[in-house]
Image 1 (spheres, rainbow, N blue to C red):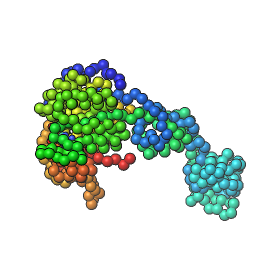
Image 2 (cartoon, rainbow, N blue to C red):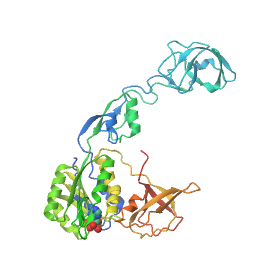
Image 3 (tube, rainbow, N blue to C red):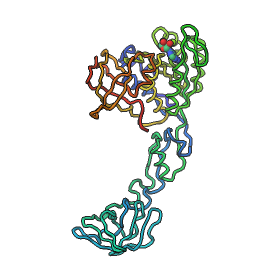
Image 4 (cartoon, protein in one colour):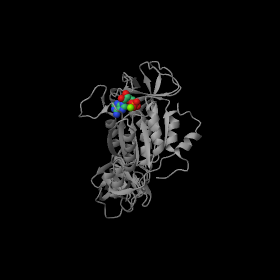
Length: 424
Ligand code: AMP
Ligand code: MG
């Protein structure tokens, strides 16, 4: 890991923002100062690279396309044999199909039947599509108005041999798998998976499979965190529930940071609990504690424990997911080697409900986006928006993002929306 000149706590001291009211964008930018891709790459078969990040440029070993070929079904000829203002009749001397090229040469007054992808034969420089031709045996009449060079794809037109087809840092999606295969490349270098250790903190938490005592609840955060990490392609190391006991917490932090690139915890960073966790983490590493000007997800800690990055998320189940998506996801992508990491795009939709909102913080309400009868996009909240109500995330297909300056939203107003699920 690259060690930046500035340490985390020095940077936070130099900061003129109030840690008790930290704007979302400012916290995100602060974290990004300290991120660099993991060291360590491996070569994998193309299919295995799905969801991973390229650790080296993929260069094309060949021209793409490899041969000059036809973009249409039709006939290939010399452009000079066609007429701009009159029909031209040429003699068909053979055929060039995809994978079965015509062996001869096209001379004056001649043409060759050609299919899309067929190699344009020597001598020919132009293709006329079949809809613009009339065949009568071997005699083919072409409509006027053709241009020399039309419907011909030149060798190397898409990519020249030796040029970069995909740059290092690209996340491999289905399109990249196909593109790499189209070059005849069978293996690529990817960054090794990021190892992320996580645990839940809280005396009230029980794991699934055990009975609940009075005041106890099931630990759901380890399930959402497991899901979010696995979807990102990280190696998720589940360390279970750790009770609010300094000794147990200290050993959990030590073990997690020794075994992972990143440590994520939930709970224990809110007012009251933060104090003893803070004292402990000051011993083990360098951590800053913020109250983010957002809802849900106010308390958040970021720092370093040993060589590992640390994200201390709030305890409430919805806050965990919102802070993960708004702060942790982008950071993990940078650590995974992805570059540049664009924030998930937002767009605007008409809100059909009244939303209660206090200015001075960013809210991430959970919404349902639909298309209205007139074709425009409409959004409404999922219902109860409490930070403990996971159903609000489960019912949602988007966040409704209400910025710091926004107050109450009236029905019919335009709001910013971020989809939870992408197409690829
Ligand atoms: P804390 O930040 O530790 O004060 O927790 C805030 C709220 O989230 C409390 O009501 C906790 O019971 C709840 N909570 C904390 N951790 C979890 C968890 N792993 N699963 C479900 N709820 C949790
Ligand atoms: Mg707690």
